[in-house]
Image (tube, rainbow, N blue to C red; front, side, top):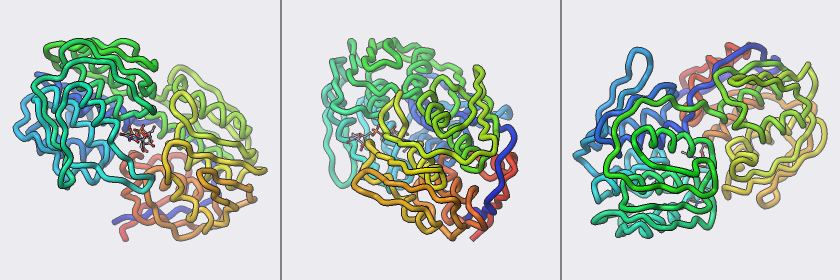
Length: 419
Ligand code: EPZ
């Protein structure tokens, strides 16, 4: 295993390029199951979750080639094994996204229940309920989902609560269903829209993209396509917070400020100078200490839960008091005890953290637990006085492409060392 060693206190300066979106690439890779031909993706990030997805698709009979220009050629058109095995699914919950495509294309699927993770129990009841409404027969036993259908039939689906991957599963299932499906209270996250745009390039008929009501008219088949995956808004925002927490000034290129308004609004509130162009964002703290800012996570276009841990880290050294309320996941606070070991003044009351900004944190030996909590520990280490060591950085590698390289580009003193 590897750990990161960070010597904190250096304001980050410079320019980096955002990677392609993890949470776009994953559903789009699984959508390759729907097509009768291969798809070619560009701008997919080099992350362990992507390799896990490719391994899972390969275990089901798919082929892929990583081209020299780093585009990804994926042919999942002829699967010969309709089982998503526990050993692979347990490492990545998003594997549940094989269910909709497999069911609608082949009429049956056996998918391991993903199980919970550090941030919550992560149930999949909304996925299964909606697939049953489309005509699937579903049984859950021995830790597996057994699903089958003689042919899915489009219908009106209503999600009681907004759910990103359940929306994506139903969109994919509905593309080859008989008739029309309408999804009410659909997730509006940009990654859902990116999946829809790719599916439409493959011949699907999806409208209402990016709104609460998405309509999918079933078609007979989907063909191959090539698709450029959108940039990762959470990776981009994480680096902007890295600059903010160290009082630096950076530019993130190949990103899309249009889908980051709620986060950029909060960065302006902490006192950052933000300049944007069509595909870049520049943040400059002008050497100032950030001001504390209150956060309430919600669904898109409001403040994303995937940025909560990072803004909690920012608030620990900000001027003033703040409250951070997590409304999406029941246990997305694994970073709190670790930040407190660095001297943060935090109190957790239910789903709200009460934070009193301190002048500075001190470096410590920390343990990463989940993807975004790990990112918040890196941010705290960049700002802290002294050295911070973060164990189990494999959590970070799931969502941040070569994180230490990008941080070094920005002047951080960070090394990845073997345990
Ligand atoms: C997606 O997870 C993202 N993952 C998460 O990003 C992100 O935090 C989350 O959406 C919210 O934006 C991917 O896109 C691969 P949900 P997902 O279904 O789809 C409850 C990261 O860090 N729920 O929108 O699993 C659920 O427990 C990851 O990149 C049910 O109760 O999240 C949660 O409380 C972490 N039953 C709420 O809905 C269900 O069947 C929203 O979850 C499904 C969800």
